[in-house]
Structures are given as C-alpha cells and as structure tokens.
Image 1: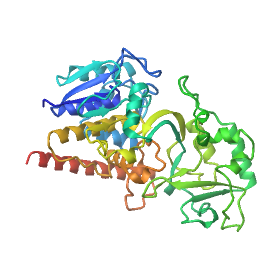
Image 2 (image 1 turned 30 degrees about the vertical axis):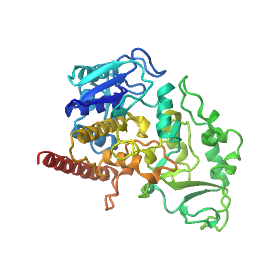
Image 3 (image 1 turned 45 degrees about the vertical axis):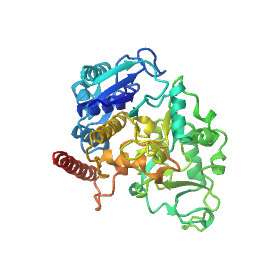
Image 4 (image 1 turned 180 degrees about the vertical axis):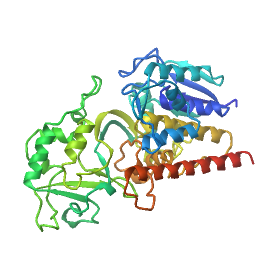
Amino acid sequence: MSTAVSVIGAGLAGCEAAWQLAQNGINVRLYEMKPEKYTPAHKYTGFAELVCSNSLKAARLESAAGLLKYEMEMLGSLTVPCAKENSVEAGGALAVDRERFSDAVTSKITEHPLIEVIHGEVTELPEGVVIIATGPLTQGKLAEKIKELCGEGLSFYDAAAPIVTYESLDKDKVFYASRYGRGDADYINCPMNKEEYLAFYEALISAEKVQLHDFETHPFSVYEGCMPIEELASRGVDTMRFGPMKPVGIDDPKTGRRPYALVQLRRENREGTLFNLVGFQTNLKFGEQKRVFSMIPGLENAEFMRFGVMHRNTFINSPDLLASDFSMRSRPDIFFAGQMTGVEGYMESAASGIIAGKACARRLRGLVPMCLPKETMTGALSAYISDPYNSGSFQPMGANMGILPDIGRRIRDKKERYGAYSARAVEALAKELERLDHEDNC
C-alpha cells in the first residue's frame, strides 16, 4: 500500500509493530534515535535491546509467560522466533544472548523491503497514522507532545503494591469490612496482634532492597503519598499503624475488638480474582517481598501475581485513553505500544506491539477487526489496559493467570489448573484466527 505508517521506537514493541505492518503489505517508517542518542539505560546499537535481565521468563506452556509467548507465535511474532534461535541455557526459562538476539531482530527489520529505518531523535509526532512505542524512559520534547495528547494521564513513576490472588488467601484468617461500616464491605482485612506486628516490622526494616539505577530519582522524593512501605517503617515502629496499617474503624469479628494493626486488600480487577495490598508500594527485592509479606495473617500461602515496584517508568493512563486495540479513543490514527501502555515486561511489551501493528494494518486494509478473546493472555492484557474500571488507580501489569476469566471449576493442583487455562486460551485464539482467515477470504 502507498500509505506509510510511522512507528516511533525500535524496541521490542516498535519492532513487532513495524513487522506486523510490513508483513501485511503496509509501508513503514521506523524511527529510532540510536546511535545518535541513547537513554541512560541503553548501550547497544541494535534494535530490541534488553536492558535488564536476558531472561524472557518461563518457556512451558502451562505458565503465564509461556502461554503469552505461544500466543505471540500464533499471531506471527518476530521476537519469539529470534529469541529461540539465540537462546542460552536457563533451565525452564527462555533466555537469550542479548547481542545475538538484538542483531537477529535488527537484521530482520532492516532487510524488510517495506520498512524504512530513520535514525535520529523524534521531537514532533509525524503526520498520518502513528504508533508510539518509545518505552518507559521517554523524555524531552516528545514526552511533552505525548503529555499534550494524554492530558493529565501521564505518569513518570511506577509505584505499585503487590497483587495476590483471592483464591490463595486463607479465608479463615481474613474478613470483609470497610472502615466505620461506610459503604459496602469491599475490603479484605488481615488483622494482626501486637506480637505479629512487631515480628513483621522487624522483618520489613531488615529486608533487602532493590538498588536503583543512577538515572532514577528516588521516587519517594517525588511523591510523599507513594512512599515505599519499608521507608515508612524506618521512621518509627508505630508509623505504619498510623498509615496503611491503621486499625481504626474496624473490629475483628472473631474477637469483637479492634486489632493491633491491619492490612487491607483492595479489589484489583472487575472479576475479583486479584487483590492488591493497599499502601504497600515497595522497593524490596521480589524474594524478600514474598518472604516478608507472607507473614501477614491470611497471606501465608498467597500467590503473588505481581510484586511491588518503585522505579522510573513513563506510562499513560490507558484505561481512560486507549481502546483494546491500543489505539487512542479520541485519536484513532494514533496507537501506543510497549511499556508506556501499562503492560509490564519484555514479552508483554512485544505482544502489545503485535496487537497494535495487526490492528492498524487490518484497519488500513479495510478488514474486519481482530477481537482477541479475554480467555487468551494477549486478550486479557488488552482488556486490562483498556477497561475503564481500572482507570482510578491504574498501574502496569504483566502476564499472569490471575487476569484470565475464571475457568468455572475448582482445580486444586496449580500445574493442572494452569494447564487448563492455557489449553482454553490456545483453543480460543485458534478459533479467532480461523474466523479472521475465513472472513478475510470471503
């Protein structure tokens, strides 16, 4: 087609978006500021650079990460085959040789006859249809342009609390209630006695923290209200009891008395399968979060679908701004892809690029829209970032089984349960692709 789509950013998401467009006969202008300019986190000249871990997480289909990659391959992914061709030994995970992986993706992109690569920093949005895939470190004039597009719906720090599954909570130790009985009893409450609280406090203040990158301003110097729970605890043994762990306004139905301290869990999704620990944004290492937060009564066997984070991460309030195909509701000619949309993780970012690229290509070709089933991991992520229900306290989310609709039957064995979710997802995606193939050829 003569129409050319501009894709800004040659990271995982931008490369996938450009690839999907080009594979569907659409001319692409792919803008990448390297090697003329680098973010503080990027060093290599190639595209799809992995800046942190070289692991793309679990490979097995019966895992959220494995299911996501399997679906991506079904959708024609560029990055997953490149990763497999340049993998290194990593047990049950798919890990890659960073430079070989980047070189493979770069080669595929630069050799495609319909993709024109334009090096240099973008400071203005190009005319026409655009896919913005500039990543979580977007800054400067382009960040200002994006802010103009999104209004107040642009955040610069990811300050998120851990998320656990409702199914994994010990229902004998927790109870539903709201403070002072106001409104519906929407919060799950985890009461603590003094001994439990003091043990938790000691474990928290001695837990190991993540070391921030040099280029990251410490988040709690920016947002006092987003202070990490361990930082709050360091200010005094009772500080948390006057903050997120205050027990006022709630009596424990088992004792009839106010608990010494209280942790509240708030519903994270419409279905009520996920709950976050209110006020527990944290900079602790993931293993430490599992160890320390499992000391909270009712969370001893909690299944963590996402751990808390505090780091530099530019992202938009997608539920207010984006449709499920990653296009702007107010500007359908502009798409977003990558971590900026609120999907978190290498492959999640790449998957969003696939969806945006495919959706854009199908629209330009006059084809029926793709409708990813919510039973699929790609569909569930798309639904999460575009559901207005999530707009009030939107935080980025990675692939996890907790965002999939309930399977409708109780399966106690975790491996068997995840296997059932994965089998359902693959079947649902296969049916959708079969539908598209049929309608495209009618």
